[in-house]
Image (cartoon, rainbow, N blue to C red; front, top):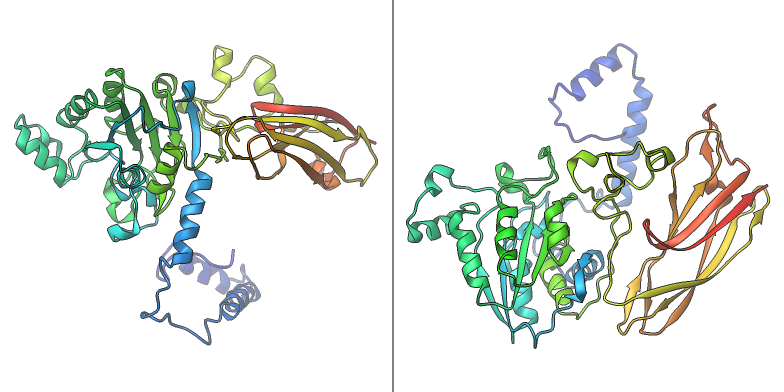
Length: 452
């Protein structure tokens, strides 16, 4: 590591490093190498010729940057659940929508390592919905903050006027805010509740995730679950939107809320991108790059476990359901459907021969959509323990309704290797299983191959 962010006077890095150099335990040549590489990067960036930015030049939030931010948000939002195809929303059927939740109308979509921006630079979830669907009556209920700025003692008042003022000042979710949301929900056709975490860096003490904000739970902080439960009892359709920088899950929410959208930290246009997906102007195509556990007891939970964790019966708990996550690696729904077929692949390969294969993906639905085929490989018999599968290739394609495309992958021979007990990277001959699908738990094509 050539550079660290510690300040120069810290006792954690620079001071002990200086002492190690004096003792001859760290050679000065190593420091020179680090400095040389850092200066090289600065030179390549042109910092010696142009040290300072031009404050009169618009280098932030340019038209190009804004366009890229919106496109990135559209691509990354993940549709986790969509029971009975509740999404996309029919504007003619749902003419009055309640938007509530602690992340409905704030800049939490920017995430950690950010500071508050001018309102013109950020489209919140509430604003995005109102902008995309002006013909829909959007009702807002302020749920307060995930963590309150004002003390709990101050919020323990029965005066409705004072409770409302405390919400504006930064109060947390209270009996009053839950009651207000439920009352308004009864006169609406649909509910969008925006929950999750809060990571804005300048609100250091109020964050629930980010640097120096670890938690002992993956559940929703504070009274968010109470709010969602109360809204679900109104028997109106509920869409839960999760804004957060790490995986969160509550088993009751997963089981009882018909539609769940994970938008992560989508950036300045996250609200617009979500609204486009909500009303079907954009078909969601994001896939989970991680595994989301059901509860904290499942951690560590990741797809590339050793086979014994799944196959011996001595897995994570007392029942088979405990072995499976809330949402697996690669999970992500679409408003259309895809069919995988016509896998073409040899079964026997020689040493140092790359694996070439092809297969077809067809959009069998009525809407255009993007799909991410994933290819996993399992080494069936090996000298050391290897995972049940490892992702080796993927791509993203766009298909019109009814369109079919051929996907070709080339897996280098070396990608089948492992580190053996002598700590040498080798490819061992034998049987391998290739699996292709929409996610780790949704495999559509599979074939065994043999390396000679």
